[in-house]
Amino acid sequence: MINKSTLRKHFLAKRNRLSAQKVKQLSRDVCRQILSTSFLQKTDNIACYSATFNEVTLTPLFNELAHVFLPVIKANHKMVFSRYTSVQELVQNKYGIFEPNSQQIIAAKEIAVCLLPLVAFNRQGIRLGMGGGYYDRYFEHNKDNKISTKLIGIAYDFQESDTIQAQSWDIPLDAIITNKEVIKP
Ligand code: ADP
Ligand code: MG
Image 1 (cartoon, protein in one colour):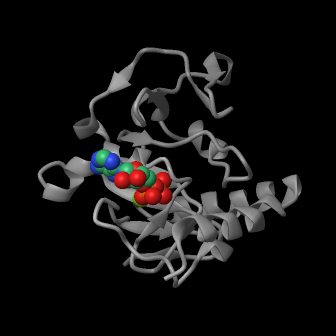
Image 2 (cartoon, protein in one colour):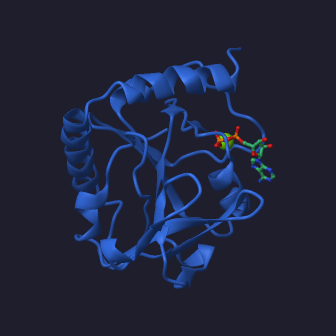
């Protein structure tokens, strides 16, 4: 098995090679794919993310949705989701990622759908993230199926890898949406 950190380096290097224009173009394709599904109901609480390091940009979607929440990181690799109101009230965290300055934190059980950034994925719904384990911790409760937020990985098609292996703490994705297709494991 290729280790996670080697895989991360490989897939991050691939993503880093995208031009800003390509990121924009492919992100538009991803947003179109997202809107072609019925995953996002306008009135639902949707957890999104602020794209950094060439991640797929979802900002074109923010204005289409009524209730958007973004991650706010806390100590010990914990995070919460807080209401997005406008670009003006976003502030950069220690990773350089923009997060809401507001304190309108949502309870996990109120989030209908979460769109997750990723470094790589496989067709079984296993996600390779940046290595912080933030989403695995946050959605640990999803495992018992009592509270279940729909988890959707957002990716470029070239981030697919058949060499990723799940670890016991990895929370599987319910779907992956790329610029080319919607994958349901
Ligand atoms: P990522 O999901 O960002 O790719 P990993 O899955 O490699 O990152 O997890 C990163 C670290 O987070 C691992 O060391 C793992 O032990 C830790 N971790 C993940 N989920 C939990 C959890 N629910 N509780 C405690 N630690 C966790
Ligand atoms: Mg993980």
